[in-house]
Image (cartoon, rainbow, N blue to C red):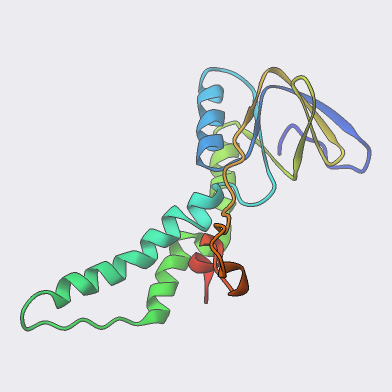
Length: 172
C-alpha cells in the first residue's frame, strides 16, 4: 500500500489502472498493466488470490487428490487404501496458507502493484471509491469481481442446509 496514505481524512490518488478484485483475473490484469509500464492499484475486500486460491480451485483439488489416489489404489487387486482425514485437511490448509494472503500481497507489492483493502464502488467515469480513498484511473478501471455461488431453484432445496464451495472447502 505504498502510494496510499492511511489516515482518517479523505484521500485522492491517481493511477493509470484501477483493478477492482484481486482474484486470478484481477491479478493477471494488474500484472499485465504493470509490465506495460502503467501504475496499478488492486482493490480487494477479502483475500488477494480470490475464490480460486482459498475456497474453490486450489483447496478443492487438494481435497480431491487423496480420494482419487485412494480409489485408484483400491482398484488394484490385493491392495487397500486408508487415509487420515486430519492429514487431508492439513494438506488443504497448506495449499490455502491457512487462508492467509500475505504471500500474494507480497508478490503484488514486490512487483510494484499497490494493494488496497476494502469494498470498491464505482463513483463516476474512471473513479472508484474505497472507504475514504478516491481512486482516479488515468487509463482504465478493470472490474474483476468474480462470482458468487447461488442455490438453484429446485423445489425443496430451500428447506435443507446446503454448502457453497466456501463451506465445502473450508470445513474442519
